[in-house]
Image (cartoon, rainbow, N blue to C red; front, side, top):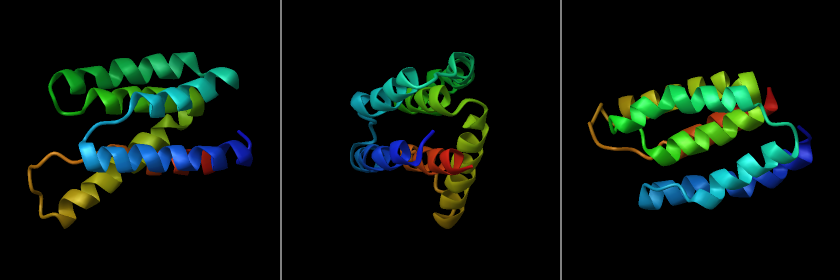
Amino acid sequence: MSRSCVILLLPVLLWISLSDIRTMEIPDTGWFIIALLAVLTRPFWLYGAGVFLLLLPFSMKDLLGFGDVKLCTAMALLTGWRTVIVLETASLLALLFFAYKKGSCQRIPFAPFLCSGFLAALFC
């Protein structure tokens, strides 16, 4: 993926993150833009389907929001196997956030962590 596409995605990722922080919801337009970019370039359909099927049970048990599932699926369509980097980075950052917050059991917006991992995957 070209650097210019990554630069164009930065405002979208910031918007998704801020929306999730403010409302605990990810706007459908945000993940759709990422998925559309994947479809226009070279989508990794198998990875997208795999991530969706992997994360769906977490959403059904209210451990992860469905917006996070859709966002990560769109990211998988664009990054392919590098989705592992997205999920690992996002999970590590969320874990550090929980440790900083002294392990409180409150819900947190996960999209900022996913967007950080997505940027890491795009630059790898």
